[in-house]
Length: 308
Image 1 (tube, rainbow, N blue to C red):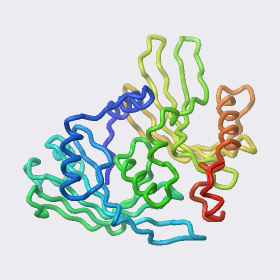
Image 2: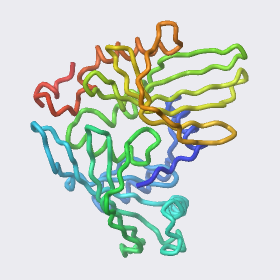
Image 3: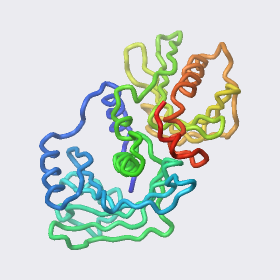
Image 4: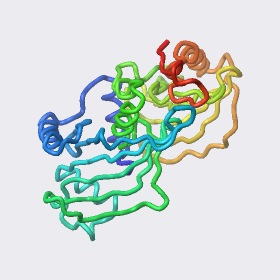
């Protein structure tokens, strides 16, 4: 669909996730649930702008390897409040097609999910008014593909669809109080503190590599957030080397910018501030084989489905 998180919103939601605080509008939830009941869509979540739904009867496994689903197809639904409709229209750049946001009631999208890569692709989208008339439509050729992390608008849909097929607890892990695992903390000479946290819900093993997303933030001695790095990493847990696959960098002056990466592995020395994080991630690899291998296609599904 689209990445709708601006710097302030992303940072605010990250803080609420870590604090375990809700960020939804309770009145909006009641309205969205009523809409779901009326049309027999299953409600996933809502906030002050969007309501998210999926239809379990339309979830289909399109391909398998060794009896493990490798492509999941489904229709998803997004309901809009006036504020959400305005934001969506602006993000899509379709003001000419929908000049009045109040006419946009909901949208339906045909998507495909690849659980092994944590990706979701949009095949087709239709926007509707309150009477069910299509007011904008698009078929994506090629499909619009997104990798799902905590900043993705699509994360709620992704976990619902994957859980519908696998029942491995993606949604529960997304909302778990220990979703973010602290890796290391470092204080500089001027009193600034940098903390690195790993998103357990995104972790998976690929050979000797642990693939995951890391959130690294720096605050001044007065507690002001000054710097954030959001990185997808590959950690060779046996060799103690890591590389940054992709990353974004936020500063108070420049906002979010894409970080350049060279794709090279670097060793994490024992005297490096990140070394305690390496040890914690090695412990995760040792203790959570079930979770890290949950969608592997090279293991029997019967043993892969058993929690350790």
